[in-house]
Image 1 (cartoon, rainbow, N blue to C red):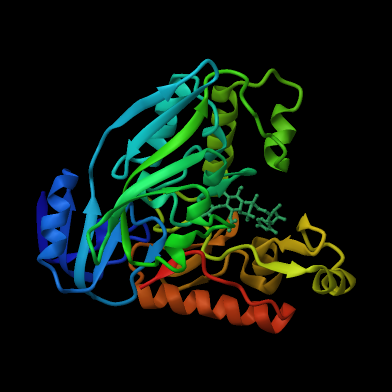
Image 2 (image 1 turned 90 degrees about the vertical axis):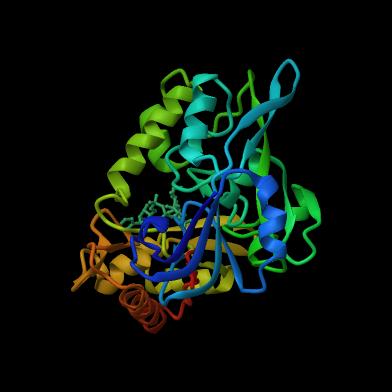
Length: 333
Ligand code: EPU
């Protein structure tokens, strides 16, 4: 256990924002959790890898940063394994472990920043796969009663970049471990996503080959937070109904969209931002990433407020141009 008082949050968030936190407790042993939580009356924030959060002011409560480690296969049959992973494990290191063992299901989710415990919160997703596709359950504690829970997939109410932990149970739980079902054979490869399909369609697929390709694409499109602070996509891709989509298509025939079902279309937020003149746009310490305008970057000196104002400017411009309200994917504090 490590305690930091009145300390900078800079190394706890991938936007690299330098705000102060009153108290940060890093916890490696989750048996310490009940004691810490029961003695605290302050507001509590559970922080994972800090890769989806923007601090815009000092945080005057307790920040719990889980560092608990461990993964074990708890059940296995001919074709699948059920793996339980501790919340403090790094997501991509875990993916690499699975790839090395030729376990399938995580390959499209390679190189996503953050920790295991945060993955269910926003149902992380990339290249046609979401956490919910391999999720079995997660365990944790309720912050108020300290009672333990294990929520199965349906109870987590997963949807596009959201779950019960971002809605009714927002800031009410701490997730301590996650169970995932992976394939040992008969893998369900998914290379439908355009970028993946181009390079892999005529090759013999493997878990490793898809992972390597995803890593290649992500490295070319997304900035490394070590060089440019960022939290991946700042906004969600907006979902509009088919009437709205048709009228957008009349006005903007090139608008990229993906049909979700009969009534709904997901519109490319990157395209809306690009078309609104933000491609390569910089404003002092803040800008959009040259290869992916959905990613807002910090040149190293930006404050959380500067980043937020820049994002709000994008949001307002998109609304004025397209009458579409972008919704933040990043949690604003
Ligand atoms: N585009 C432009 N201009 C650009 C770049 C992209 O118009 O400069 C348009 C193009 O039409 C392109 C489209 O944006 O085809 C889509 O770009 P990309 O494949 O990068 O996907 P995205 O929809 O922008 C989503 C996720 C990413 C995820 C990728 C791949 C959201 C909010 N974002 O981005 O997730 O990696 O798909 O699956 O759903 C994240 O959540 O932090 C994240 C990075």
